[in-house]
Length: 214
Image 1: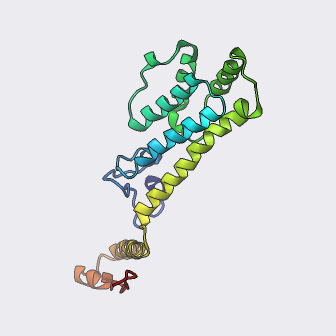
Image 2: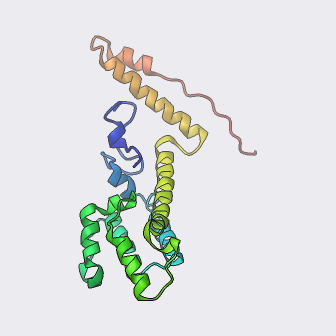
Image 3: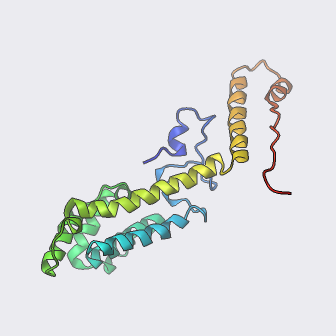
């Protein structure tokens, strides 16, 4: 998983704040990165569900496994428990196994071995031709790939919130980081007056030229 604010702030907390750039969460860990309540950040949940549904249906996935996959991820992202009564008895052990491993781990590609076992049983019991892409490692890879793709896109969205979407905002964010770093260095010199610190921290904003037509 990509380094979150909480992780990188351990090294240089002044330059890299640990708070989420999209909401008021003070400690952005890997879970918060994926579950941030900001409306722009939550858009990827629906996109992920659509991609997973299409991918699973294209490789003859057992509908019960598909439902559990979508329920499990959705409830984890929403922070709510999965209603066990909705899960067919024949795959109840899969729910228990994956919940023990963690649905966050499933997003990173660490799934229960029961996924592939149950998928193969479904194909055989329903006399569906067993192909390379619809069982075993190839089948699980087909499911994991959309999760990684959408997590990566969400990471880019998060970074735009942190560092800015356009050149002007990016410059401003770099100045803010430099300001925090310089101020931290002055904090190591208690003899410096507050007036001196503020004067030395005054950074003239660069002039920006508009590219918009008159």
